[in-house]
Image 1 (tube, one colour):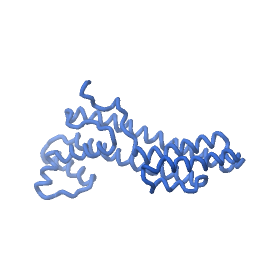
Image 2 (cartoon, helix red, strand yellow):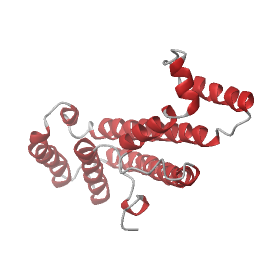
Image 3 (cartoon, rainbow, N blue to C red):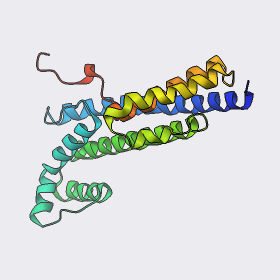
Image 4 (tube, rainbow, N blue to C red):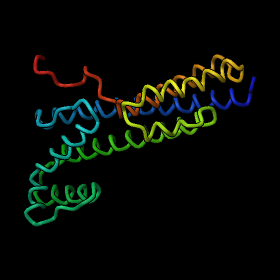
Length: 204
């Protein structure tokens, strides 16, 4: 039994699990604030299923604002989120108007970017940790979707052989399989989706 390997895998698994929980908390935080925006915008903004669709929707919502229309008329079309926040602050003061819903939309956009970054770093960590057992785990980044199944079973066989040869105990083996599954789920399905119960349905 390779005790060092088992300890290393379980420590990594705890760290990965923490990141996973943190991502879930951020998604919940996004949903809570997004519901506020649905109300503030009087349903102009709706929560979408995927993070990408929410980014598109939030961007569209902000670009449709009076301020952004005014910027476009002045040929100011290239600005960062921070610059736009400053423009909104100035606009609020100049026109004595409330731009809080647009500032909220920008903060939601930033939460999504943060979730995406964290999901990417979690997968990088998982791939890096499994590479000590599965030599060609990085192949998952380059193969076509139609090759995922074959590659998955090839990689799983390598993890299985560590277990059969008593180099991994059962707990570490299960952790490795969960990490492997998580990596493939990410490459097949992408970033986590917003759960259905938080989406707007016509029949409500």
